[in-house]
Image 1 (tube, rainbow, N blue to C red):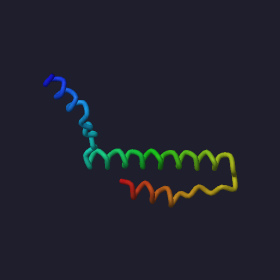
Image 2 (image 1 turned 30 degrees about the horizontal axis):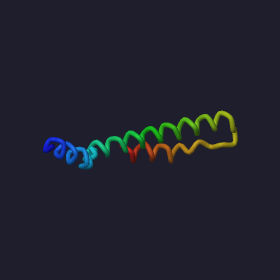
Image 3 (image 1 turned 180 degrees about the vertical axis):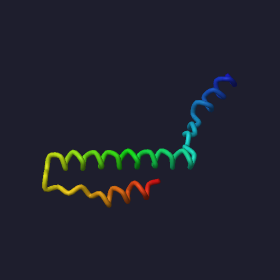
Image 4 (image 1 turned 90 degrees about the vertical axis):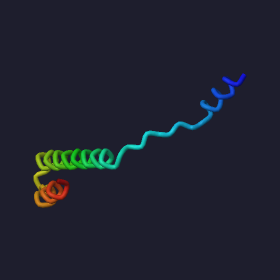
Length: 69
């Protein structure tokens, strides 16, 4: 009986969720930012190929790359 009550208490206690450390969270956000910059760059280059009137924002993309490192 006592073992069952301890087991029930153990099961009823909510489990602590694993919280990522600050450096791990920052690294994940940095990688996501890098991936998004690469995606936008490739989309703009693709748009430039198909639409001759589109001007690739070279300075803006360069600034994004510089600020993200």
